Length: 169
Image (cartoon, rainbow, N blue to C red; front, side):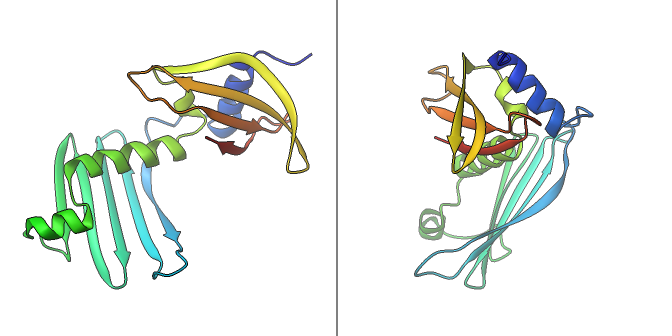
């Protein structure tokens, strides 16, 4: 018998975060984004959840820009300097709104499946079992309260371990 959606999600969280450490994460990761007609962008993301700190440093074609939040206080740098003009800020998307967007984006993606318990997350009670790229998976459907977002997400989990295999939105 297939477990309920809430049970599947709980088992997935137990698989990915058995000690309940999400929310106390402190660390860095590097992401390399490759583009067909541009040099790759290397982003270093540093999060310290207990200190309410986030920073993303992006280097592309030898140019570094960084956006950070420390207890809600925003910092922006371009080529290591906090002094740059409005034209550079616009061209390079160096805004506090963008800092919040990056923080929310990386916290969400790297906090899965634990982030699926956040307020505003609407977990469909239906659990489907499907073949996803040749692999049997349980599928959770997630929508969001309109105040939170309007995306529709599908999360594909291993039916034995409940490991998150893929997501789609």
